[in-house]
Image (cartoon, rainbow, N blue to C red; front, top):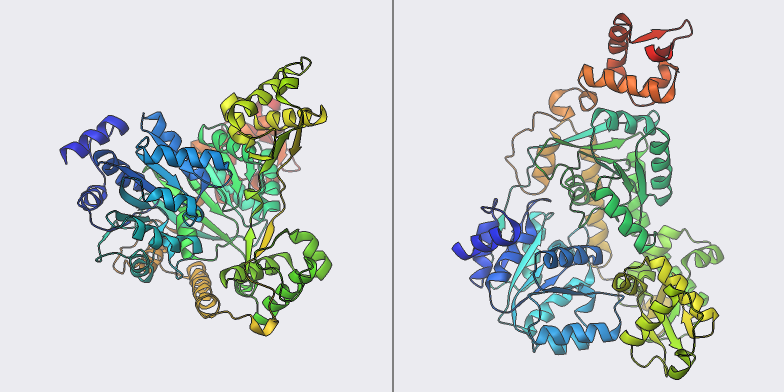
Length: 635
């Protein structure tokens, strides 16, 4: 282990490994297929990055999220380690150059999304690469019994056959005992080999709080009681904006985040949160993966997640620095019914799925027996309006049709802009009235893209912006300006999904949904939802409940959650001096306020009366007959 310790110290500055990191590193370095189960914040990346640097060849890292790959590649490069990634949105030329560099040994790490594994180009080049081992992040995605199954992960078995000498290191923070077995089977493990770190987080307190009054008031109570960075999760994009606005109105720096935002906007928000310019991020589950912020003190869920795995992973983003942190789940009288509705929304009746298939065919004007391999733009909102479908149910029906092999949904994130020059090369040099930004973008296109004078080429505005140190919106504006000047033909990326007919259009009775696509997975979802309902309603220690779900049957009680203490308000308790200071700051910021308004703004109710009484005695506040509280400096 001396070499491994030296690498750890040189690149990451740590003196020793934590938990089971050493065991996993020794196992994969010895060429053994290895599965590592480590909670969020357990240091999974160290377990493949350190041995890869110690071994000959390049480590192939399969990772599901583009943002996560970009972050890890950037971090490795900052340490002087050669790394690259391949993901949707790169041009064909960029992919080819990257793969050729990998063949010639230019990198120690190649990150790739599972969707790219099946391409003929990648597989042909993979055979020529010197692969040390394969690392599979979020490995639970390969299991059909996992909460976040992704069919593209099943192609990893084919990749293994192309490089049979390379062992596999699979890593996940959320896997039940059944999923653990299935991961090893799907990844063709030569023998069972699992290293498991306890999922217990001694510094993380799990609480469930009834929120039958104004839920916004509860959120303010929690944020006042627990200072420091926080993440608030909700399922609705609209609610992320509403809650963030409410927090800002109450003096808390907050922003909203969801998958529908522009990429550059999401990047800026992530950076602002990580660097402390935002205290609270209000987000859908699109936020969090790859966010390396260790000092998040509180994670609040406004809506109950539909699986213990999803909740455990999102809640686990609090307290990664080891200091005391809280994961608080807010529920109300509607939560149970709302959760159970998700079962039929996610797995609608088979007859409904067939009707959606028929309506899609009508919408896209696909004749019976035609369509195999045909791709067409598909506006889900317009489709639902024309055929009177609920958007969530229709989308999930299309997802099931995709898993059954009839259609393929192509996400709008995968659409790319296209460019072609309309002037000849010699004409470009005579143009002298361009803005500086337009000129820089034009010459970037000339230097980095081939064939632009004879055919359209895909471009990526984000890559251009990064290379030219410009904002992505400025690059887009420059392309528009060049198009208006008739120098290029610019076809912007369309944020409209596309559907590909994998097979010819079939009769409805020909559509078959095998049990592992529909019935069994619906049953699994129902089980997870019932488990979450049980979690919300249980009187058992919340930590103990979650750990038992993940196979830790003898976990002790945490002694700190609201079930262990019997105090539903314990999560809101703050020290009296701190509360006194908060009331003073609130009155200075807002001016004279009724007592009830102080409570609404987030001061814990059971402590307000006593602290206000003490402040009145100490002549820090005064109270008018109408119960309006005034700070001494405003009296």
